[in-house]
Length: 529
Image 1 (cartoon, rainbow, N blue to C red):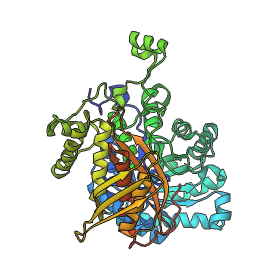
Image 2 (image 1 turned 30 degrees about the vertical axis):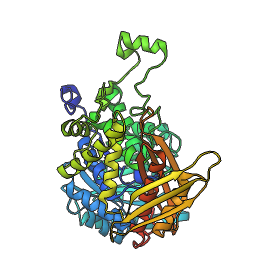
Image 3 (image 1 turned 60 degrees about the horizontal axis):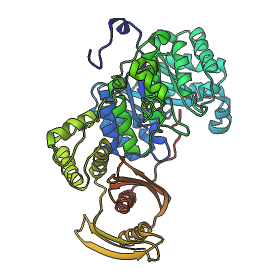
């Protein structure tokens, strides 16, 4: 049976639509900013995962976000592509422009409805909220047939008013109505009552799909989403690895595998190709720089690991004693293909496909070149090394490399003044420049050199170093964040030398700052539904 095939009895179950908002709500996680090339890579992976809807971004929020949504709409053929918009004319028009080339375009409009939002944020009366919502849906409907509406902070909205709003927007043409638990306030019993109330009191509810979007502030996002499904909801909004504002969103991998594993309870199914879950999780983790906790359900390093003797004995006797899922069903391979300096292009290409990277010939050649360089420096090249090469390539695809590293030499140690000498080349002019500096350590000295040479005034806000694999020859990967003129820029670098990895990450962030210096600051928006 192929990964997308299901048993005949499963095919007869009603389908729960999976609305993935990793590229919109997930990217709003602090530190998870993605460039357009990275968003396109994730969008392709989401299409292979076979989600039903990809919320590609919030087009009005910035020119970059608009362009990313526009490009994603142009390449995705099998999934609906949605753009988020407040119920304002400029937001909706901008979203319509971004998704207009999609095979299946959707505009997702929202307006806050709870008393606390009406009083303190919108300062609007109930009747005004209804009018704004209806007008927004009607305007969106003039551009696309598929319109979704979200009453923001629905779980804290009075049920009679929520009923009135939902009835009105369905009458105005909304084909999906999403009920968000925007601040993660709800509990499963409470959320069940909300969904059941709407099904009992909204007279035209059969004309729309009821969706849910749950945040994880109390750790209940997945539980609330599944409770809503049992109450009649037919779409779940979620993200890869549970990324999102504050504590994040309902985790796609947990929602999907709960429905699959406990079909006897939920009596429904999804269209997700579950064998693409793990590669997708790894890709998102690599590109955002946000690590998956070891004990994370489904995709964590320990999710299918067994150390206790009694567990190991049980596993040897029969896997089902301590595993309710087959790791291969979520894309975790039973064994790894080890690549080294003697491996060829075909073996690398095959492993890239397994990891979710379907690269064109030019990008494959570029990855292979970097792979061979790395393979000469270390005995084995692991999946994490390959993913780091691909993510670095995606950075370069954004044409943000004004400066590139030519050479670097550092000294440090006990009783020695740490120094660094750095030589950079300006890719625009071809000029090379060199400087030397001292610092608290060789990494700090290298950072000082880079700032002097590039003329950028930056403050280091965050610095994270991790080993990509085990072993003495493991590559170090550095993720860091710089503050430049009130804006934040993230950088990523990797090397078997952690000082070099740090300098490359710092230079990556500086290049992003140089590229973004001429761009206007994005308009302040609230896209948290």
